[in-house]
Image 1 (cartoon, one colour):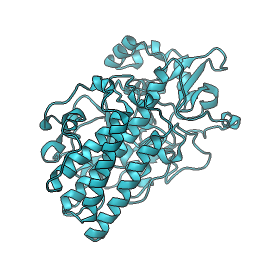
Image 2 (tube, one colour):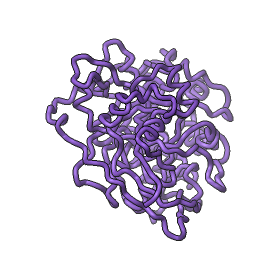
Image 3 (cartoon, helix red, strand yellow):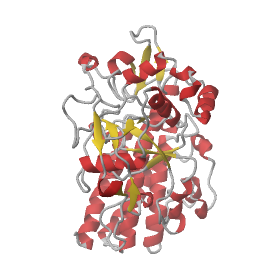
Image 4 (cartoon, rainbow, N blue to C red):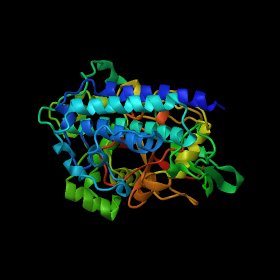
Length: 443
């Protein structure tokens, strides 16, 4: 166990690394790029830069630094996201209208906050301050991932379809074939009773888990099987070619109504392309690519409704979040670092599963590539208690009308994801890097 001074020093090093990662990701972007808000779900990158600094200022510096002087008192409400206990805030859909403060002032704000947090950690503050810094780092990682998803949508809606990075120039990638799906069986012991979630020691400031991952508790899991890899673009194209979007028997009622109202005929970022052999091209952070070059990569940017419809068409189902966590835990014991096609790979797109490269019990792509929809609604675990005060709004108040996703994506930072991590979105969400893995009953 680290001493408090050592923990503070470790957090300071990580703080600097995380803040630098955000700025490094922004380096190819222009100030104009950072102003765009292309949908109600997204936010401008400039806003992400300000809001993550707001979080540290509001929940760390203002509470644990005596006589702290805010960078700008107006920022307290201007860059509040949804913490109603802290007062009013602008409507989310208006964030693109914040031409002022300018980018230069936002970067000065980040520097102001960076210096303040560094000074605080150098003084070895109390345990609660250290916990707040740790939460702020995970919060910044979430917004780094959101910045990647948001700028992709912004560039896609731009008529010029600019690329975040130059296109891949690797013609060989279209000849890489994903391995055949294997069905990996799991039979939880002790009569099917397994433990999920985490129970962090409240007296410790080491380690981290969000409140929605707690407490660790017992669940019943019947014998089940998971597909060894995620569903590919080619496999999803077969669903489309068999009129998957025209068959109401495959869709949940709300899903059918949503799909028809939105005019969905393919995953988000797929575009009909006569020059492509497949008839489709796919927009990525490297620009458009013919679908045949990406056909063996996991399909992504699906809603829960589309993932569920595909599973029904395939004669299978989506896993529950507890099945997913149990399988991931068998392949990745608690405390072991995750590996996969994650943010640090700088691919920024799902990759093809590798032949003979399964993890643990033969599973591949459990971490990274695409967030995997589960059939589980997002609710609190038995005994769940949100954090006290305004921070209790971080996760708990969203436990309605959302579905759980697991595993992270190609734009999720590696140290941010773990087997117990619960992501959640409304079932009609498509702008995230979300895909699916099939499950079936029995062992």
